[in-house]
Length: 109
Image (tube, rainbow, N blue to C red; front, side, top):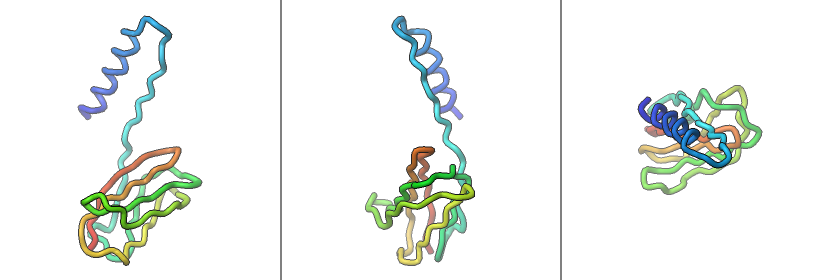
């Protein structure tokens, strides 16, 4: 909440402090996504995404090593990621598309 307030105040101050052409500042509010089951065994479900024709999905370990990378279509604001090949541990899912950028964690049992 503090980050959103800071961004709003920064954008508000920026718009009044500029004597040159006014620039439009876009504030992107991070959306909440739901990841389940957590811990996962076979599949991780991610809900609350924006539909996209082509999204890049990256799963990396806690050291930043990419262990899965795919381009998938997001339909019905949801995504199912198969994780059976992954070993037990904590992983980070990064989803990038024209519509959004989301990063979240899950635990593989």
